[in-house]
Image 1: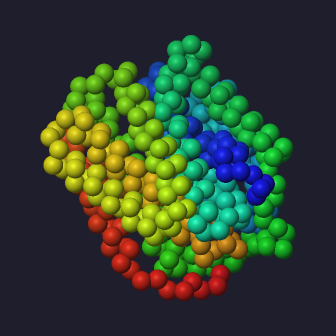
Image 2: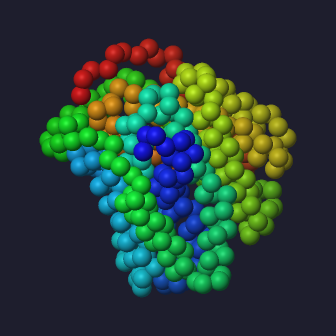
Length: 391
């Protein structure tokens, strides 16, 4: 598998890292309808989204160590199976509690495929090469917002809400087949790390490692650029600038295209320029986007164009910071990758929640957030590193 060309490797693992984004994006257009279909409240339907996001982040702390003990291939196959069964369970649900439970199963599957795929990258490639692969795979996930909301809406109109979840179940089946046919074990038996009480000591060592904390926090701030856009964009695009609700998906598709472009571009740049220079370019673009949004007149272009600049910068940061944070932990890459993912989602969730405490009557709160993220990253880059201690 290491002999695969770059595009072959990216194509092979795209369904695995893609599942999380698709599981969220394709479901968004039908959420209002699900309230009536299941005869429940919007708060209960919201749980099918929020729990999916929470489990995908926190579950990595469990699944990462499993991948270190049992190997990548078994965990990938089991995770793909869970994702498929979760999608099928959603499609067959007839009450809201069953739907929520099935979404939790799907989330564990998406989580397992995501964290184990990044552990495979760390197994196979050097630090610089792995940064390139991380960026390419992150760019692949950015394809989801370009079409998933529109696809979900059309599936609902043509075949009903169950078609959305049957499609997710089919993706799980495809991932199972790909694992069985093409993916080799990349974590040899002699390198396995037992899942025992020492796992807590390993997590303590990871979360107290200065290099990990520094770059994982940078990754979380980069993820916050995206998550905060998710939070404020409907209010700014629809409520402030008067875009019709049914047209919002096209603007969301523009955002997805920006993520994909940034991911693939940064994959090439990090290979040529290295991790540190890529991070420097990334934080510069985030700062430029935030400052441009602050001084640009209150127009739709004044929101979207600076957003595109900032999001491209965030993609530069995300892959490079993942590679730098995992570098000291090659022997427990699954556990370290899980810790990175947990911090990544956690910081973004906190940032998004804080942003939504402010009235969204303009793009100003988001613009200020971008400037703050860039300033915090610059402060982090000024912190010296220590040599990592053995785990």
